[in-house]
Length: 185
Image (tube, rainbow, N blue to C red; front, side, top):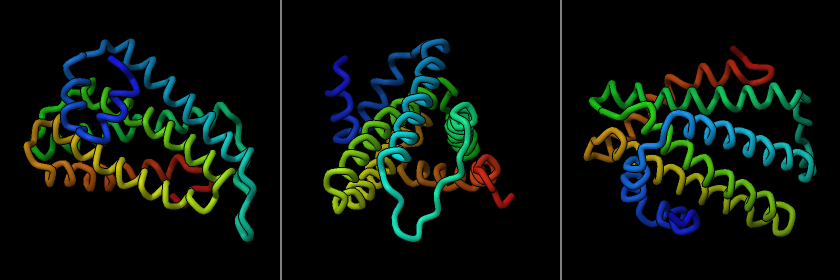
């Protein structure tokens, strides 16, 4: 399977790509390896963003933390989102498996890493396009996530998939806040 073709098809027809990815039925070892590689790559892009982009006027400098802590926090956040999507979907009558949700969310994470890299380059070269590209990335991520959850849980309804996103958000927000530095929780 050509990765570039699959990435383009994810944007064009995410439901078909979701079914293709779910049909592969990756083993747990491969999934966990892909999971941790996504975490490391995401952290590298985030560290690059902090190193290469200057602070805007009035913006506070980010809290300095060790790379290990940053990796642990990123892994925990990704795992919490996978579990929240799984259990929220099951509460709404979905039938997804952990491996299925993990496959789709990790694939989406790789696509978001590419989008973060493009955003980083845009911020350095054409900063006025960065906000527009970030907004487009958010909308596309939501669109793809809706279709991925719909296919994984076999809902047959994007509204139920949207309900999963809302319910997962309610469940995951306290965990996300607890993992953030200087968290209010």
